[in-house]
Image 1 (cartoon, helix red, strand yellow):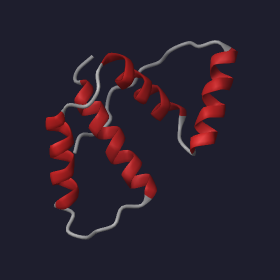
Image 2 (spheres, helix red, strand yellow):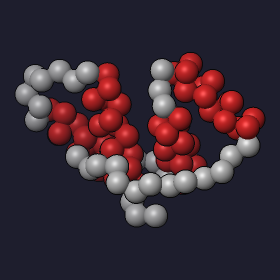
Image 3 (tube, helix red, strand yellow):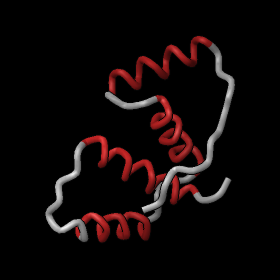
Image 4 (cartoon, one colour):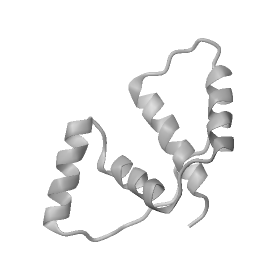
Length: 86
């Protein structure tokens, strides 16, 4: 699994911030996750190879159940890895 390690700072309008906060609250997610998802949707989705690797990694957990937060982190890490270097 990859780790999130690159920090990005951006400036957004108050309206954009309100929309992101509302959507994050609706999904029970973070603004950072929404931004990562938007980047993935706009600039490249996860490849089939990445998806198969993720399935293999999940299967290797051998019955260990993930908390929702752990699962969200795993998904975010896989998306970061699929996006590649900036």
